[in-house]
Length: 145
Image 1 (spheres, helix red, strand yellow):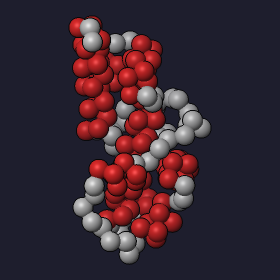
Image 2: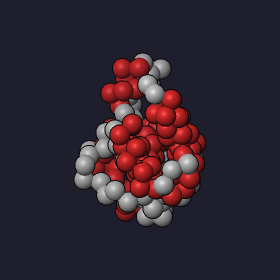
Image 3: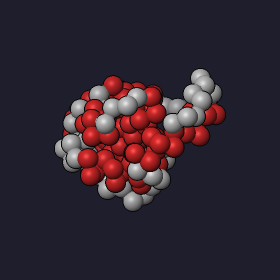
Image 4: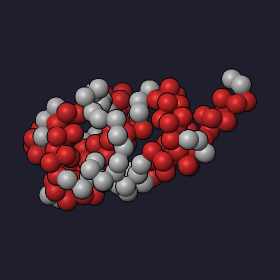
């Protein structure tokens, strides 16, 4: 790996780590690109090349992963979980959750109840990780997500 691509990868990891730490905050491509010290268009292209998905899809997946955990482990209302993971619209949250997980947040909670929660193995973690489909929009605006 060349020194240039190693530097690019490090800067992209810095931006991805920002998403991982602040997934519930409004995030947009210009802010993430600034963290990676790149132009927004170049950042979006490089992020997809390196991580296999757009910054927007990555952010949505992280939010859905956290929502799945909160739905499995607590009794907070779905609307509260929606806002806790970064969505401002419960309708958008429900639609994206359904697209990614295959059922509504409430149905997921019901389906998850009664299952024995054993410490997750790497296989179980990979199996349960939500997969985004190509139907998601590519805009990363944080406000409507």
